[in-house]
Image (cartoon, rainbow, N blue to C red; front, top):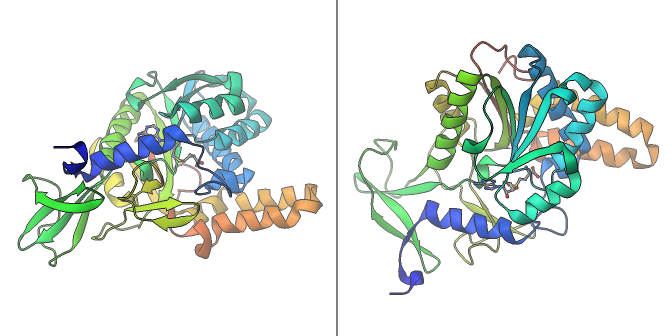
Length: 337
Ligand code: SAH
């Protein structure tokens, strides 16, 4: 039997496709497959850098703190964040030790080129981050983690596997966290890898101190439905065809992740729509200041900020979720969330 003829569980397929995809290319930007918030406006990374600085102060300004980014892509977010931090909060710049969690060797090179000596170390997994208080950022990281999918048949859930570019349904094991009732043919998703990662990070933050901030796209409430998607050159393509040739992602189930964080004893704030979050961090004011400094590109700065904030852009579908040590105050932008 060839490997192709074997059915592969969807999350295993997705993990393989994502690793092959990121190992082989720089996918970002107009000429690439998709564009992310830090590649749209420098204000995004600057605001998150200052978010981290205020969070550090709320932790009592520890003399050493791990600043970690998960899935830093080209390193753009962190480059913008560090510039703002050095300018505005030099004591935090001196205290932070920058650690990047990235599996793709090609993207590690891009990050090294952009961030140079600022990076203390790269890691393949969050478990390898050094201990101690930490501030952790992840933009469009969770959506790349593999999900499992189930389809309702009669009064049971069958698990979706992939064979020869198509789904096959196989019996699923009992005891999975799936709804008891669902209409025939309904799809339920289980982001097992994301939940395990968030639970592990939350345990760490609850015992060693600090906070994490995730930004990604997904609904505010959990529900049924198929959110698996693949994008190539800014167009949707079949996620099961040619694994590794397109960016394969799924919506992030923020409500479940917040619950997983709370179960470990950490506090969760959000999810809040990204537009509201960025606006309360002052992104619009920062974009206006840039526009005033650089009148020839004023329109560009304003349009980029609007794309991140407006509901018809990325402002509503994208959400912000913070996970904190239980004694920390609600972090900036999420006070009312
Ligand atoms: N944060 C960046 C990139 C988002 S794309 C931005 O906003 O532009 C997803 C990033 O996560 C890429 O850097 C990819 O290589 C990385 N990644 C995906 N799955 C990963 C995993 N399981 N472990 C570590 N990094 C991962």
